[in-house]
Image (cartoon, rainbow, N blue to C red):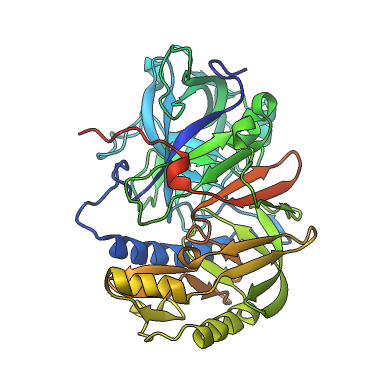
Length: 429
């Protein structure tokens, strides 16, 4: 049961480089941030690949190269914390005392200060469903969660009241748009994190796993969520992460496709049939993960090579080398006039999805990104032996309303003006 909500709810989804992020670095330009995100993307792609272990079993993806955060208010009275949003992870965990005090801007939750905190028994279904769980001396469920890069979170599986700040304009106790109180959320109360190379208050897993937030909200709201990511250039724009009925994609031109989840597959994927640019079509049937935590789109060379060749043939503008040799195709587009003509010159790239025969169209801003002042690069990279997983990254998902319905087994993608679709509250301080 959740309180203060009828048709589902929405929370603010904050990019790590946003002015609203506790990790915002104001001295960095938009271009430097995009290039750094591209570097993180290659690390995440390698981690996604490594997460396939054994005969189809899946280990958790590394959470280090994160891109998006959400605020979570934990306990009674609530402690406000910022957690990484990860669609490839199935555990919710937060830093807890007696862990040492976190370096700013992070926070540590103190269970002894909350009247609604409890432990989860090691004989419970929630404990049995958690990979790596065991019993401590008091029959509490203890966990040790390993990520591919060596990061480890360990502690006791616990139960607590989570309060979500409903957007836009939610408040405690108000009638029109109250904040959403969800009791009895299972989460990892992490008293030890090792090899953690980034600062965070925790992780909110949104995968299809039994311990994820989506699974736990399912009885009340259904197992569905959506998001709409504004362009990188809209640095002050926020977006929303929607749950329940609010996750319904209603924009015109939506493409609906089955969710592909083979045995042991923790991620959300669809089947890509071909790519079309103008009257040229390139066939290559493959599964492609939809990942908000990856910046770049990774495609098999059978698709990427002809895409690069066709774009090169059609875009009659000066080419320049890729910074750090990360990306396959870059052009010079200096100043507002140069960018205007660049976007006029770039054709749409259409992804043809299998099964229902529907398509997703990538506009120039979905296919290219400015990685240096005046340098526009194709935001795609090849699948390799080190990164053998095709991925649709978040640049390709900009200005798209992307909805996941685990109950129906579908993914819905529609073009949208994401910066306008969410009225962001002002930045204070």
